[in-house]
Length: 133
Image (cartoon, rainbow, N blue to C red):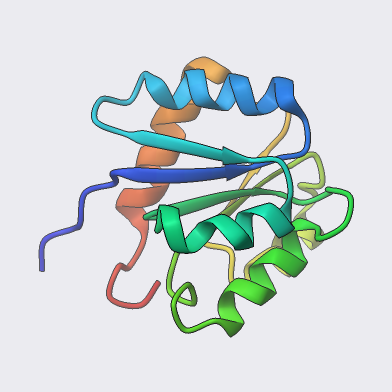
């Protein structure tokens, strides 16, 4: 089975500066459309319109945090199979294990290298079992 192309990414973070850095970093990946949201709640509202291939979630956000956003995505059949990557300062081994148990396909630690970020996302995408994600 051929791997689907990564075309659309949704990045969710309450920090506008980090959203902008991620947009710029992912903009270096050719053919990739990047949408951003400032909260988990907003992301859940936008998902039907964006239908991203991949969601990148900050963990610590006011209101609906990353883990809660992921749980709500998994509870909705329309979004249950969208792969999610947490982008977080909370990247100790126990936290990473917990995020994977919640259904995240990967965790990227903050701070990250913006020049490497796009390639990290592509590498993660290529490693996903798209029949199961």
